[in-house]
Length: 86
Picture 1 (tube, rainbow, N blue to C red):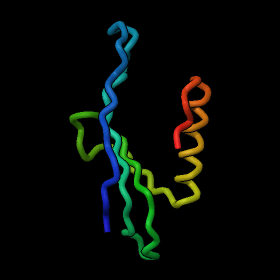
Picture 2 (tube, rainbow, N blue to C red):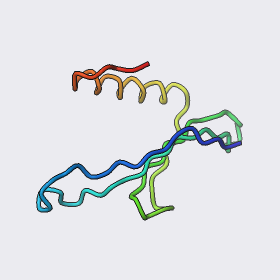
Picture 3 (cartoon, helix red, strand yellow):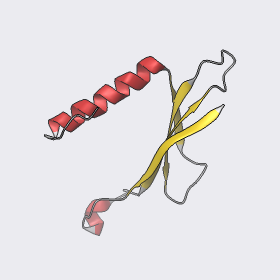
Picture 4 (cartoon, rainbow, N blue to C red):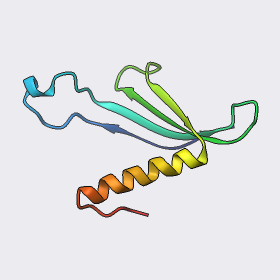
């Protein structure tokens, strides 16, 4: 089973070209899969450069690690003075 949850493109922030360096726009995608022998569903997080499909990195997160990532993102939002979200 595979099920797509959400995806988006993250553009490079507006910077002077010399300051941008190796920054490139990236795509991210979150999905769920149970492709492993234990058939336990896992969250997949894919991050790849725009225009370079198939070359990205995929993290397969069990529920505990997915919650840890969610907490890290919420904490980073709070550090920016933003609402932590749901």
